[in-house]
Image 1 (tube, rainbow, N blue to C red):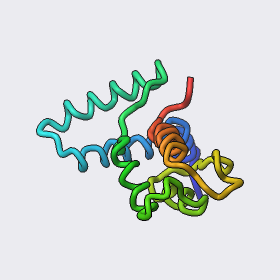
Image 2: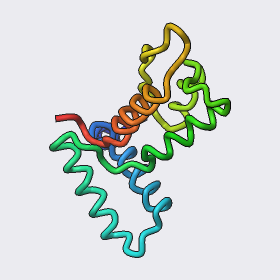
Image 3: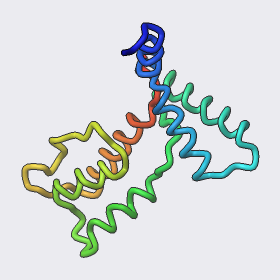
Image 4: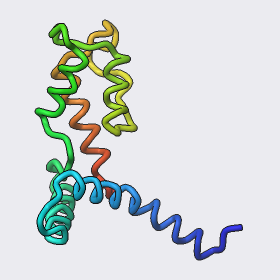
Length: 134
């Protein structure tokens, strides 16, 4: 049985996305392995704050070249498109949970490189936004 204090704590953690924030910060630390972890974390939190206030891209492990590489793996014949199933699986593997089910090209089952990158970047931004939108 959950006590009122435990319930309040769980609601607080969920409301403020504390688990997601800690997962994000830990992943960034382990990926970049900065010499000064505390200064690095402060910088990441400042970037997150700026992202929240201005809508600019916040801290993220993936950049445009990473998404190009993922798309290249999905499209070894260089057709310049992937299937909807490939698109969905790739975004899921990138950690994106709220995938656009109707991206440009879905009716033809041909998701272009540009659409893939746009949807991935937007999804990653939403995923890394470990704060409530203003």
